[in-house]
Image (cartoon, rainbow, N blue to C red):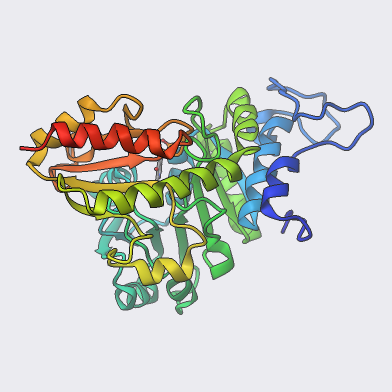
Length: 373
Ligand SMILES: *Cc1c(COP(=O)(O)O)cnc(C)c1O
């Protein structure tokens, strides 16, 4: 079940995963646009059996997460395949702060009576341990979007759980380079490969990785029956993007720490949320469970929504755009998104890219200075 050759560091695995060693084979993963294969071999129809290009992405992410992966059309498709496993009336536990797509999916299912939902604060480890005893699906997202709460995955994944219960972790913000939920004992780890794995804002893809053989088959069956298959070009681009992921993450993370420290003492900023700052409420947990603090910073601008909107309009190098985990820095006011009105009105979520950190600071500092009352 573990396709990750243990002698390779993840930095090397990212470069080599999915490669052929056949003499004459291309160095790069082949882009194979195919629905049909000649009967008698490993594959017959790609929706059921996959393609060499999808499999390269699965091998790569599976190795990083230390499990066996199934690639999907998007992060949400991978997430929906996990919820697809629930029996009618299942009990679901969700963090107080999480990706709005997941919250929407869960709310829609609850409205139709498919499952019941309980929300627990990410920092409330005893609350999660207690929830593990009765829940059928314990859904974690850590660090969380957009408040960057960090859960004690080590303690929660080790807690006794109801027989057959699934512990799922949306590991998109951490990436498998900073956190490996399966090592802690989670059933499944989810990646929106749209973000750090692809890393160039040019594709949608998702990957679910598990070390439970039966669960892997069930996820693959769900993909087959729902048709939530990854695109071939997208899989190729995701592998190509992942080749440089360790370098991108290292640079972005270093810049994020430097920017978070400066934002924390900027007169136009009220509050900075970054797990790497000692002031962060779950910094101690982050230091223990994460290898790195990530590339996302959420900060509240003084002067409310109007001031925060002005900052977004005034940055240039930092693009006013949603999403995260790409080479370019992007920033947006999260409460401006429909359905996100519960968030602090002046909270900006900044995804730090690989640009020069001083250039990024100048861009941010001048936009903040111009918006001061
Ligand atoms: C983007 C994102 C998703 C959804 O992924 P898509 O590829 O857009 O479907 C899920 N969880 C988190 C934390 C995300 O950032």
